[in-house]
Image (cartoon, rainbow, N blue to C red; front, side, top):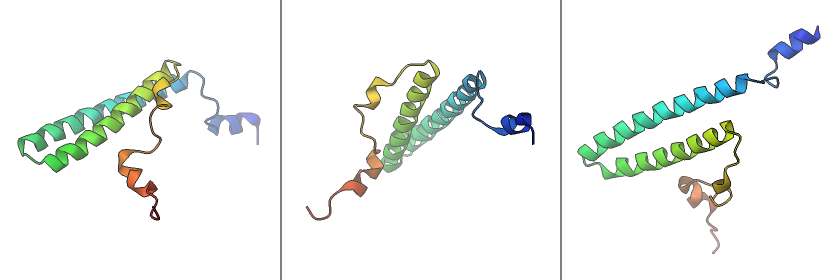
Length: 100
């Protein structure tokens, strides 16, 4: 087996390709965000407030992911990540002490 065949299949050598990969991820998240906002508008019109709240949480999560990805792409560290809890609001019930 040659070195070329090994390195051709490894994702460790990314170089300039990581920028285009991040651009693709950003575009995908932006499209999903648009879709969720459309669904939220439909839920508002249908007066399905449970669905609206659910979609708002998903939208907030996607917006955070987009912000982090854009910061990573720009080479900036996300300063707000330290202030943000690591668990999502949906997971918070899993961390409640049952013996309290």
